[in-house]
Length: 356
Image 1: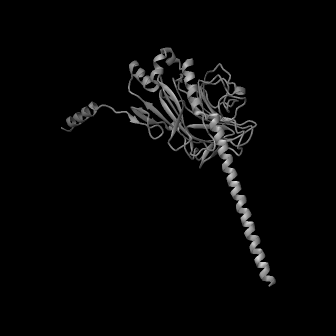
Image 2: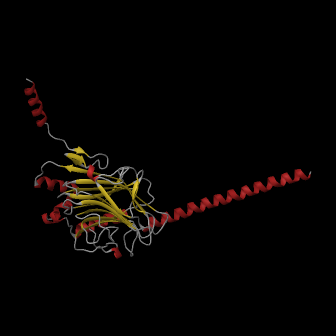
Image 3: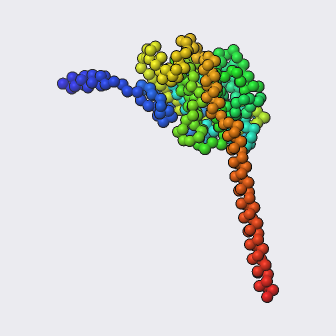
């Protein structure tokens, strides 16, 4: 009666409560009922096939491919634009994108302009906004490394901008006042590989975290209510102006987050878990539109201000570096002086022995 045994086993398995699983490595704090890798929206070396194409991604502009290392959106040259886009939109309601990137250049100061991660309804259109079109429709996360105008915030600056397609991005002022969230993080000359992790859970939250200090040590840049993303294309683009950097995408991996059917009460509990008391003061309309009120922006701004180094901290750091390099130079000069004295003394001894 093997079929009876099979039915018993299946019933027993169905009776076992389903446990949420952890995501793989990138976000150990995230839980979902199922996490499914999205091959169509992930990218790894060698990036292209034998025909120098990729089945799931397009690239263009000044982008070049190093099959062993990265997709280089721009070289460290002025006046370049490059882009990298998926060929199909993200169908999942909830997803997480993790990308390793690098921003490098020969200049110690005045690097730029920056790059952006895009989740928009259109794709692969060259333009002035970090290599992408203006009047985009969707979400852009700008990694801006050069201030076009003086700001209170510290650069490099990461800002999220949501556009319904009717707003021109203000490049002259680095999008100031158009962002819905922002933070300041070091992107060049970091101790570990720089990575970004964008998590989107519809009707609950969206979050950007950065790895730039220690391996697998993530700093939350922002965590805010989600904007409305309807099957967006995933893209990366970069540009350089009168100043430049090389902007490289090393790898991208995207996961679909699958949750069991959740009621309105379940979603509310998740918001309370993510935002705490902040969620109590928000209206349902706020959650649906993904726009935050002034108190939330003030909170996000204050958190970003706390993450920025203070003037006193920068002053002590400068004094420390000055003392350190002064001591190093003094030691080198002392070593050279005593070395020269020793060489002169040995030369005199040798001369006297020769004359004798």
